[in-house]
Image (cartoon, rainbow over all chains, first blue to last red; front, side):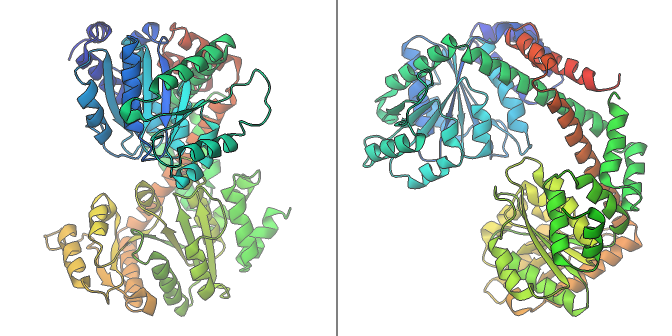
Amino acid sequence: MQDVATLVAQAREGRPRAVARLISLVEGASGQLREVMAALAPLAGRAYVVGLTGSPGVGKSTSTSALVTAYRRTGKRVGVLAVDPSSPFSGGALLGDRVRMSEHASDPGVYIRSMATRGHLGGLAWAAPQAIRVLDAAGCDVVLVETVGVGQSEVEIASQADTSVVLLAPGMGDGIQAAKAGILEIGDVYVVNKADRDGADATVRELNHMLGLGESRAPDDWRPPIVKTVAARQEGVEEVVEALEKHRAWMEERGVLAGRRLARAAKEIETIAVTALRERIGDLHGDRRVSALAERVVSGELDPYGAADELVAGVTRH
Amino acid sequence: MQDVATLVAQAREGRPRAVARLISLVEGASGQLREVMAALAPLAGRAYVVGLTGSPGVGKSTSTSALVTAYRRTGKRVGVLAVDPSSPFSGGALLGDRVRMSEHASDPGVYIRSMATRGHLGGLAWAAPQAIRVLDAAGCDVVLVETVGVGQSEVEIASQADTSVVLLAPGMGDGIQAAKAGILEIGDVYVVNKADRDGADATVRELNHMLGLGESRAPDDWRPPIVKTVAARQEGVEEVVEALEKHRAWMEERGVLAGRRLARAAKEIETIAVTALRERIGDLHGDRRVSALAERVVSGELDPYGAADELVAGVTRH
C-alpha cells in the first residue's frame, strides 16, 4: 500500500494510476478515506465542475467526448466522471467509457472514471463529490460529470455541478415530456444534439416555449441559452464551451458561484454527518438496548417512535 | 379533523374510511403520526404478513386477488398493501388496484391500499411498516404486501413480511435470470403462475435446480415449496394458502417467526431513529455553524470529514 502523500504528489504530477488509486480509496470508504480527504482539502476548489444530464439516446457520451476535445484544444486539463446511478456494478468499464477511451485514452491531460452506486441508497450523493474532489486536486481545470439514466439522481448530480448542461435530441417527444418532470428546472445551458436531424428547430422552439424564454425576466437573471450541436462531428461544441464560460463569468460576477459551492459543501458535510450518525446507531444493532426495545415494540408495550426516541436519546445531547 | 381514538375505534369496527384515514396519517408524516402509532401499538402484532414479489407479467395482481378470495373463504379478514417503489405518484389508484377493486371492493372484510414512495429515498422502508401496522391493528388476520416492479425494494419489502412468496411464470427466461439477482434468496414459497401455459413444468424444474432443492439439507431446514397456479381461474391457490400456513407453523414451532418480528422491529426503530437524527442535523441547515464549516471546506482549510466530525460532535454525546 502506497502512502497517501506519495499518491497525492503523483496525482498532481499527472500520473493517471495515482488518480485512479485515490478515487478507489475515497469511493470504497477505505480506512484511508479520511487521510486522503484531509490531504486533498488544500488542493481542491480550483476546478470548474460541469454536470451533463439527458435521456438515453441524446448522445451524452459523444457530447462529453466532444467537450473534452474542445477543452483540450484550449490546453485545459479535463476530468470526466461518468456516473451510473442505476448500475449495481462497481468500477469496471461502462460502454460509454470505452467509446471515449478510444479517443482520449492516450492523452495525459484527460482522466476518465466511471462510477456506479452499487445499489446503495444515497451512495451517489456520497461518493461523487469525493471523486470530483480527487480530480480537482489532481489539477483538472474542468471536471465533466456525466450521468447515465434519468430521474432523481440526475437532479442530485446537477446539485453538485457549478453549471448544469441538459442535453436533448430532435424527434424525442418523450424526451421532452420526461424532461418536464424536473430536468427543465436544473439546466443552466441546454444543448440540442443531433441537430442535423429533422425536427431540430422544432425541438429548440418547444424548449424555448417550455423554458418561458420569451417571457420577460429581471434584466439580471440568467437566461439559459439553447445551443445546437452535432457532437459526433464536433459541430457547435465550441459554442457550448462559450456558453459555459459565459455562465461561469455571470456566476462569478454576482457571487453565485461562491454561493453554490458553499451550499454544496454544506450539503456534503451534512451527508457525511448523517452517515456517521447512522453508523453510530448501526453500531448499536445487536446491542441489548435495541433488542430490548424491539421486544417491547413486538409485545405492543411501546410503539416504534417511542422506541426510536429512547435510542436517539442514547446517542445525542439533551 | 377527527380525533385519533375515534378513528382507531372505527377502524376496529371495520369501517374502511377510518382505515384509509389512519394510513394517510401515518403515510404522510402528519403531526398526528406519533399519536396514531402510540394508539395502534397495543392492537398490532396479530396479523400474518405475506409479501408477494415477482417480475412484471407474472400475474401478481391476479394472484393477490386470488389469495384474497381464498382467505375470505376461510372467513379471514384481509388487508392488501400494493407498493410501487418506482412510482413518484402518491395515493391514487394503481392499475392493479382497480382490477382487484372490481372483485373485492364491496367486501367489508377486505381493505385495499396502494402506496407509492414519492421519490423519497428510503420512503418505502419508512412508510410500509406503518401502513401494515394500521391494517394489523384494524383487525386484519392476513396482510398481503404486493410490490410492483423489481429490484432492491423487493428485497426490502420481503424483509418486512413474515413469509415471502416469489411469483414466476413460464416462458419468462429473463424472469428467472432476473430472479437470480436476489429474488431466489428471499422466497419462502415459490409460485409458478399461468401454469396452463407451455413450459410450466420446465420452469418448475429450472427453479428446483436453481434453488438446489435436490441437494441434501439439514432435516430441520425449511424447503421452499414450489406451487403451480392458474390464479385467473383460482386453480392451485388453496395449495398456496396451505404452503403459507405450513411455513407459518414451521416458523412458530421454532421461534423463527418471533425472531423475524424482533429483527423487523429493531430495523424499524433504527430507521426512525436515523430519520430523527437526520432531521436534527437538517435543523442545523442554514445555521451559522454549518455555514461557517462550509466556508472552511470551500477555502480548503478543512476537509468535509473533519467538518462533519464537528457537526456530529454538536449533536451527540461524547
